[in-house]
Image (cartoon, rainbow, N blue to C red; front, side, top):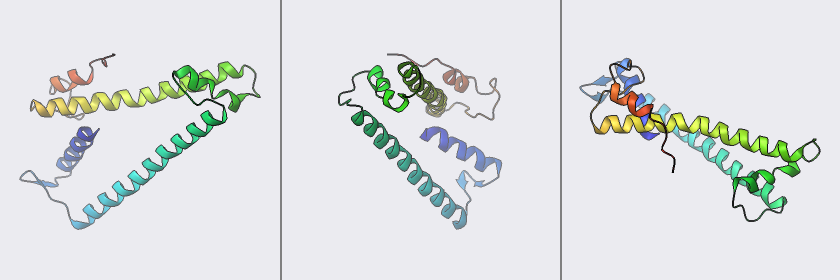
Length: 150
């Protein structure tokens, strides 16, 4: 994601004419805002990450699951949360599946975009989501490659 974010920042700076002779032309106020944005973004991200870990561990531990070996074990641990609903077993698996699928739908585009930017930069290809595919063929070819499954 680093390559994607850095490339997008450069594209935005070019569009706003903030690059002079290849160097950024930004003032102290812009740098201060970037630092604040980065700091608060990282704090929020870490809070969300730790919240997920703590809630997940609490649910698993309270369910008596101390050794998760498969995704089915983790899904089964959700059953106590929905035990009052009909078909609690199916519902817990459905909730877990929706979460995993949603995560995949978020992660795959980010990973393919990051890979496309990094490969394009390594080979000095045109790379931008603002370019049409015929202007950045290699970039879009990398982005559209299906993920390699192990």
